[in-house]
Length: 200
Image (cartoon, rainbow, N blue to C red; front, side, top):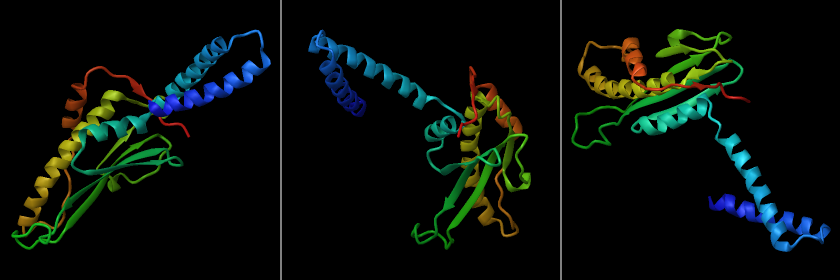
């Protein structure tokens, strides 16, 4: 707010100086008021433009609010028309947890891919893939529910890592994704609106 106010005052002073010098019939205070109104109109229009949400900004906001204990990043591939939600689970080594049994640090990474009909990818490379129409976007309830469920998946994943380490016969660790549970969460997200695909 202070930044916008400073910009407004600077722009106002320049406009007043220019306008007042070329229009002797107007009082300085009147010109100042008119110029300030014009500056604030421009700032409001620009603010609406900057604040316009898309899939990336919406997901980023949801992740900040709901997934607070894990590393999550977004990767927008403009050429392949995909958006990947990348997440990591990290289990510290015994050096970081003194007194525990000897355990090497474990870092596990996986992703969820949002894709269009033009995208090319191997579904086996991702925990979950979700299609959408580029011109239409994705419903807000779908994105919000996806992030809500992602946090559940990661919570369960951290618990499963300990079970994996205790199971001497287990060779591969994988996260579990339940489509039915996702749809249940989406159905309870409330009112929905379409969130557009980001523009370049």
